[in-house]
Image 1: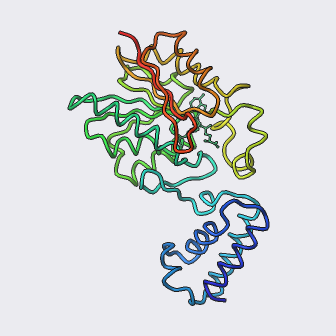
Image 2: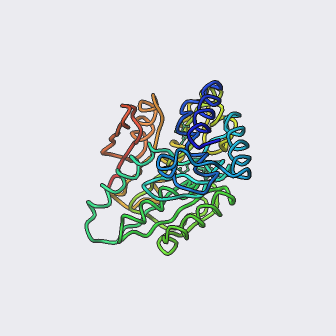
Image 3: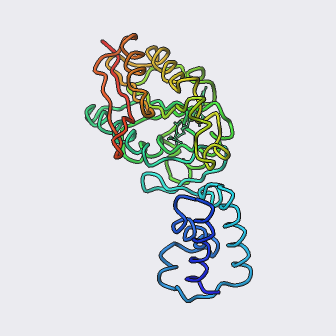
Length: 283
Ligand code: SAM
Ligand code: GLN
């Protein structure tokens, strides 16, 4: 069968199963099966696959039909226009998280030429720290996670993106491995509530690490700990920048106001959901 027919058939098989982006998934999986980029498919719609390639493609589509995320099937995900290795030990980096990176960049630029020290809590694949390291020439970044398996992947991603000299990786529970103070603490923490978790799409709920997603009954437990213990690890006028979920503004604002933070601001994502909370440690 030709590429064009294979794509049509896979798209329809995935569509019937209710997968949200069947056409895109079919293309990504076919390109991966023949070890080419996606644009090759448009240029060669009449190409026939070898029997090995065909078998491979069919087995990948079968996995996707069980809702396994495409990024785990291919082992790759793009973030901040860079390539990242991903496995089921790490959360697949989300496009929304680029907004968190943008906000940290804006705060860093305000610091001018001076060296800037950034701490990332819960680095997962390393996406945030690696994106920041690639943009900030004068930044020293420390990235933590309590999952040794996630850290191993983050370190490989740092090496593959040539950023390993700008990032130190530490393993431990939230601030436990941290000793110094920082100008900026950034985190995309787990922020799904127990109830929301049950309602997530099967590709997230059944495949991504639960410990990367769920944080207490309201989903704000991790923000609370970051705000409470983060004060000790922030320089005066240092910033805490956290990703958050829909409907969490009220709770997070209260958490920050109850501690020693000022200049509390929120930024929405492109869907209009408040996605990033920022606050400055008082002088
Ligand atoms: N930074 C990555 C990103 O944005 O794609 C991953 C974010 S994921 C939502 C949260 C990360 O926090 C996971 O990698 C998880 O292993 C880590 N994590 C969860 N609980 C933790 C804890 N108590 N201490 C340190 N890291 C934790
Ligand atoms: N945005 C992710 C989701 O909705 C959640 C990420 C997180 O908990 N930090 O699946």
